Amino acid sequence: MFPFGKSKKKEKFEEVNELEKEVISMQKQALKAQRKLEDIYESVKVAEDFRKKMAELEDFYQSQLINLRKSFEESFSLILQENNKLRAENENLRKQIEEVITNFNALLKNIEARLNDLHKIVDEMMKKEKKYYYV
Image (tube, rainbow, N blue to C red):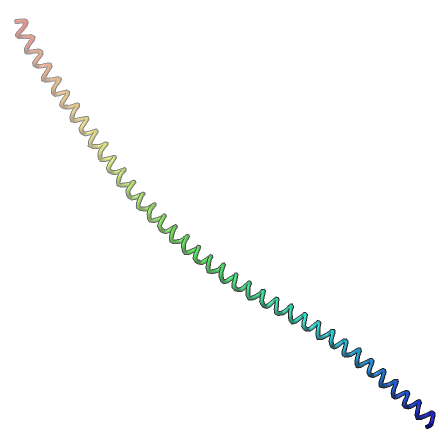
């Protein structure tokens, strides 16, 4: 055949080879891109799993915080009630002590008055007895 035909075939063959090389190169790049996409997908999946776990933890700790707050409020309320009860009892006891002290002071005055009366009686008796002895 003609040398022109061979060279065209050769050119076509080389062109095909070049195209095949480009296709292979593109396939390699596509594979690399696919691997990168898979890595990105895995990273996104891990991140989504992490976000889910964080949301679960946040919900858990939020509920724990709410339970703790309720428990604290109930305890604080009970402490306040007990404190008010003890204050009322303390006030009642203070009034009772004041009443006892007042009664005791009145009793002491009464005893003092009786003792004074008794001293007067004894003094009068002593005066009468002196009269009898010295007459």
